[in-house]
Structure formats: C-alpha cells, structure tokens
Length: 487
Ligand code: CS2
Image (cartoon, rainbow, N blue to C red; front, side, top):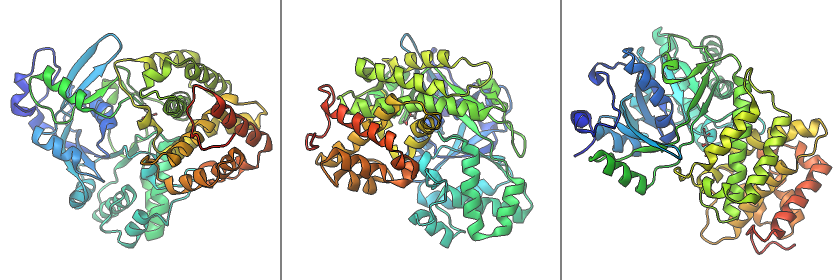
C-alpha cells in the first residue's frame, strides 16, 4: 500500500494528517527547490494555513536540477511524511500542502507557465547559496557562469532561478498581471535583498526597462529560516514505512524545533503563516545575523573539525571536548559583537543550540554540512571575524574554524577518491595541493578572493594567527590532517 489521498484513512491513528479537503486547494505558491528543508519548514507552515480553512495557498513544488522529488511524490499525490525527532519523543505527520510537482529540464517550460499564472502570488526559493549565482565575497553576478551565460543568451527558455524569475515577471508585466513576491528561504544574510540584487543584475543585462519595473514593483522580503533537517537515509525510509504500514518513497526526518521570521513586505496578499508558528518582524537583519553566525557558523566549524576527527554526525562531534570547547569559545566571540533582536537573549539562544546539536535522534552528517564551504564561510564566520578585527579583538576560535576548513580541503585534495563538494572546488583543490608547506598552503587558500576578498590576506596579524592555528591543528593528536603536510 502506498501513501496517497485514497489511503489517508488507512494511516495508524497516531499519525497526523491533512484535515482539509485537498481537492479544493488552489495553487498560490510556486516553490523552487523542493528539497528536504522546504518540506520540513515552509510546506509545514503552509499546511497549517490550509488546515485553518484558507485553501488559496497550495504549493507547486519544482526541482530545477533533478526530477527526483517529483518522481517520488507525484504517485503519492504530493503527500509525504514528516518525522519530528527530539531526544525524548517523536511525532509522525503527513503533510498535504504540496499539490503538484515538477522537476528537471523537461518540466522547465511548465514551471515558467505556473510562475507566470495570475494565481501565483508568491515564488519562494530554497536553492542553496550557490543557486543565486553571486560571487559571495563581492556580491557581483557571476556573468561567466555557464548557466547564467546560457540564460542570458536565451532568456525565453530559462534554466536558472534568475532566468525563470525574470522571464516570468516579463510575461506578467506584458499581460498586465501584477508581479509575485519573491520569497527567499535560503541561509544568506539579507536573503531577500540578495535575491533582489541577483535578479536585478540579471534583468539589467536583458532589458533595462524591465529591470527598472522589477526594482519598483517587486517585493523581495527577507526571512530567517531555521530547522535542522538532515538528508533522508534508507534507514529513515524503512523506519517511517514500518510505522505507517504503507510506503512513502521520500519521507523527511527533522527536529522538533522550527523557526521562521519573515519581513512583512509582500506584493499581494499572503498566507497567515503565524498559524504555523512563523513570526512577522521588521528586525530581520538581526534575526538572520544571530542565526547565521551562532547556528550555521558553529555548524560549519563542527563539520570541518568533525570530519578531521572522524565524527560522522553532529551529535557525535558534540561529544568530543575538543569540539564542544571550541564551539563555546566561538559563541563567546560571536556574541561579543552581535546585535541580537529585541527581547532575545543570545545566551539562551546558544544554550538551546547546544541541546539541538546534541539531539542523538538526528543523524545529521558532518560531511553534508561541510559541503559548499566557499559559499558558507563568508556569512557564517568571516562576517564576525571582520567585525572583531575592526574592533581590534582577537578571534582564536574563528581562526581555528577557518584553519579547520583549510585542513579539510587539503585532506580531501590528498585523499585518493575523495571529492570536494563545492562550486569552487577546482580553485580550492589547486591551492590545497600547490605545496606541502603550511605557510604556502594557508596563503594560497587565503588568496581565493571569491571567498576571502582581499582584506584578510593583507592583515598580517590575522594571517600569522591563521598559520599558527593551522599548524596547531596539524600537531593535535586528536586531529587527523593530511599526513603529507610538512610541519
Ligand atoms: C547547515 C544548515 O547544511 C548546513 O550548512 O548548517 O542546513 C542548517 O542545518 C540549517 O540552516 C538549520 O536551520
């Protein structure tokens, strides 16, 4: 038996399920990047809106790169199971907010048609940092990226989110249809503004009038998104299916905690996501900075150090004093220069993070978090580091975290069969392999301007501290760095 509309009433009693008439749900949102995070976060909040009786916000989920989610969920009428796991308890629920799915190159024309349709009032995004095609250090559009160049050359048949958004907005403008709101749900600082920068830079290359119209008319609210959601494993799948008594091809496992803070700046009407626990706020920058620097900054640190100490999961890595102590120091460095949102005690926030990271029921792999470091380091670690350098404050923990990333890159470069999962992998591996001398490796990696800009490599005190931290990690018996590196 397979999970689908017809079988919903066969689910065991403890499993929550959509209590609204799914056939009556109207499409209102097109979501690009219908991965695990979206399905544990925005889709669940939207499910609560639909459950309240406002059926105007069904989600059409699109995968741009692959059709895997579409292929798994379409036979299930878009239904999937969410397993929420805390250290003490778990809850299964079936989510019904996704009413249609598209995926892969063959569906792109349909994705565009849905985005252009008047019923779509929101286009939301979880496409990861690299999906915006911006140089993270300079914020400039990557015009030479082959995907961007292809869309610029052929704007009516777009394949990137930028091409799709601009072409859909062009079609709407021509047809006299009001624009949709672009709602970024990615882990980027000022994610709405970042999306706007990328879209405008792209549009300006095609049609300056259209770009001016987008600038005037389209809203790009910023959001802070948070829910730790590891990639689904076969063991998760087997467990969920045994609990359901039926087959779900792609369930999602997540933590109990969920947070969504949204800037209330939408073109047209919007769902009342507060029904699902979201908060509307005009202090998004502070929320985003706190989350990116405290949670994601610590996550990346833990991921690289975890990889170097043979710790497969976040919870395992938290057991190692070397790592938990480093995180405590890192949080102290972050909090010293952080502007927290009004009414939030950042020390409480960090205490809660420790509990979340220690959640043994969540097998969140350090290797998963370690991917795309070039896209993550700037906002997670370097932003705090720069603030501290400006104030003349020392940052030994942040510096060790960056040295950890460097060792991870060097070790990957020297391990046969290992792949560095990062859009800048060729540049990083080139530097990582260019020498066996710590000094040259550190300087080589620090010279990658797309990650570090130009200021850090010129900061003598910082580069000396980074080199010392790099050498210290290599000498630490608990840390297995590449043996090739000479000390
Ligand atoms: C993680 C995030 O993979 C990563 O880089 O740091 O996905 C993290 O789990 C989420 O931002 C939590 O909200």
